Image (tube, rainbow, N blue to C red; front, side, top):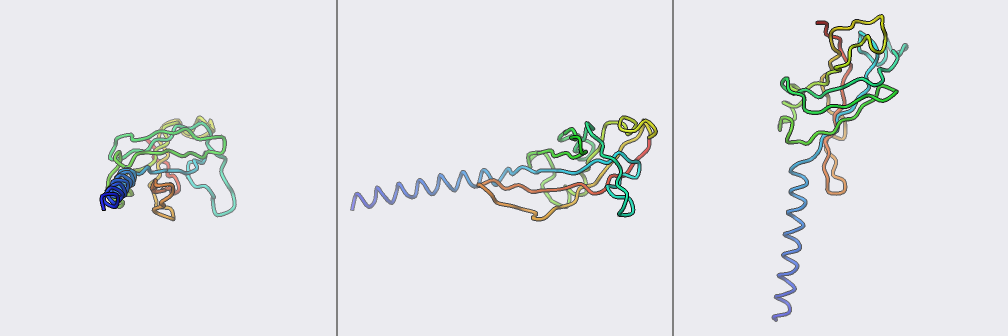
Length: 154
């Protein structure tokens, strides 16, 4: 009887410890925000579905929520970027995240094409990407990708 009690207590401790690890991991998931920045005033990846503007390589891209920069990335040679931010650095509610956060290209457009404006910024709102929540290796990540960028002059 004593041996069964010891085994039962040991199993309960292991289950409790594992539950705490999973709960802690899921309580602070990371959010991946990715997209592609075009070297274009229209900010569109595909213009009229046919012509693609060139990519904007080496551009500084920032995640801004309510005016505060929460994450920064640099685009690669194809204009693509990914930034990871801890869930506690952005609004808790998904709707608030999508409405109060945006991706801002801090590098002037004239850097990728001297004929484009040297003031103003490309901005993009966030949109959810499926699957919205993925549980993998005990880490939950919520993925978001940017919509088309819009140029806002200064």
